[in-house]
Image (cartoon, rainbow, N blue to C red):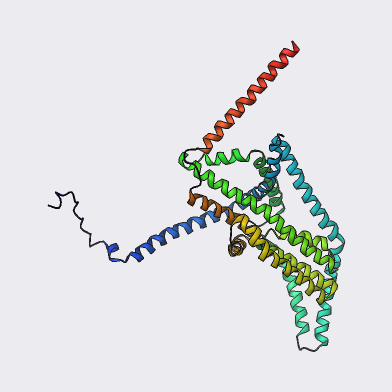
Length: 401
């Protein structure tokens, strides 16, 4: 009778299946676990592959950050009807002029001061040992001198390993030149034809994936651009504050200190603190412990302003990543890849956050294929240029006739 009423009979449960004997929570946890294990294995394989081709990956990532920084200049030229190549050349000239000024200032300031800094550091260390010995604190001064000599000899013996571990890559002169050239050429092509390169990459995916991938990529690119511009502002504030503090306190080499702080601040939190400690050390060597404590106070004050004002208000609103997330990302990046990992950790986290939010919220039009639309517009533009050239050629022939 029940089957005649249209009700389907209930299928009997296979009692021999052990999965039905487990609680629902265990089955859900197991399903999550094996999927997470696969994700972790895939991520580890991806990181391993990146490490193997790091000589290519690191220059390309640097070129992407520089492109995000310089692209507004190129867009500014295009909005005013000027050719794109003029914006590309102007942005590259501005970049190299800025780098030349920074390097010139550092070299010119340190040329005479570096040897003196080393000499004064040795004198301060010996004076400290003599002071400890005179005050009869019972510390083994001779043993401390032996520790210093062992430490210096260890630095000289293992400096190659120390630098390679800090950089996360084994850098040689040939690799450095290759990386610089690759960064330069990648930057040029991204500035000239970045949109076409992106569409070419999207074209490898199925047609249904073009629209969501393009929307996610645009969101990630916007987040990276905002990060680079805001980070320059944050780095300038750190460099200006610590440099002015060093100049007021009479610390030698305030300009190189400010430039080093500016460059180091591109590694959030850690960079400005590390370079600021260098300023405190120089103050200790030249001006004594009181001046060094004052310089250390300036460094802490500037970093507190960055951490409690600039990072939450400016950086947080730009990249939408919590400061705790920034600290964890920088720490994980430094642990996995040294200085390059700490440098790229925040922009990668910011872009990943923007990409995931775009995909989750489905911020794209499924009826538009960006790759097909780009090729259609490119074809129309090419035809317009060809028509204009044809008309100009006919006009010149008529004028000659």
